[in-house]
Image (cartoon, rainbow over all chains, first blue to last red; front, side, top):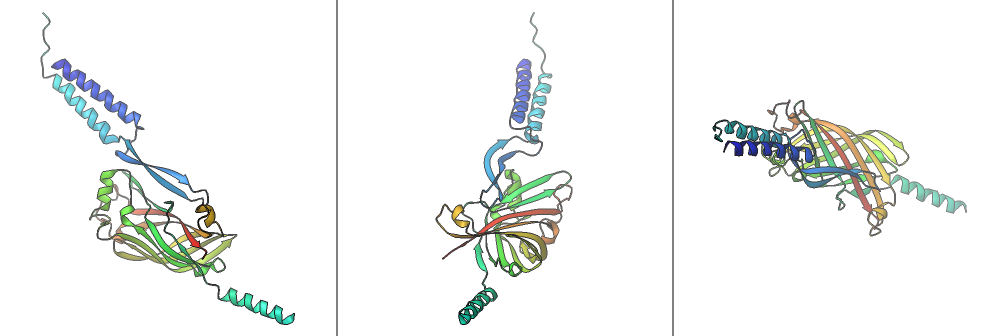
Length: 84
Length: 204
């Protein structure tokens, strides 16, 4: 149980960090849409094109890290099993 | 010969004096017309866009000072990248889009008009209505008249002229009752608006 919680905590921390970094290391809140600016060739007006894309924000990063710390902390409540 | 020249001069003069402004429709099937809004607070920057734009502007390229018209933004088209923030923004405390579905600007006067080629800049005064509150404002606006360019934009389906309108100005959130009690360190008191619009005047 102790090792299980430690592994789960570690995997969750790494996974959270990987998702946050992989979606652009965004320091604001989570986005489900991104805006790409384009230029109309005739009028030369700049206009936004909105695309659906998940970008993990700081609450995803923070939530994942806090949960992984809970799991690692919880593992301390269990005694190590003796191998003898 | 003299009579012909006089008649020609009279016709030219009459048409110049009584030239009617063209009516440009800003409902844009290409989805290019947009308004960008920015609120830059110390703790949070909010950037969003609106694309549901319509309206009519009467513009005479020979006499741009007579420009007049009304631009309407569909409040439900206000978009921010975060879905929770968008839900709050559309809600009763902020923009209340169900009760106030339109944001409008109706011009009353153009002053300080300067022309450079097909581009005209002017200070346009008018009535801005947001969330049911109307305020008199004045904003620097540029107009670019693109003669016979509608065909290029509509793949030849329509012929006519285009009018490109650009404006950049700032309004105060509290002036329009947009959650005036919200802390200014999280939601900026000033809203920077950038309008990029193109209207079409098809030839009949």
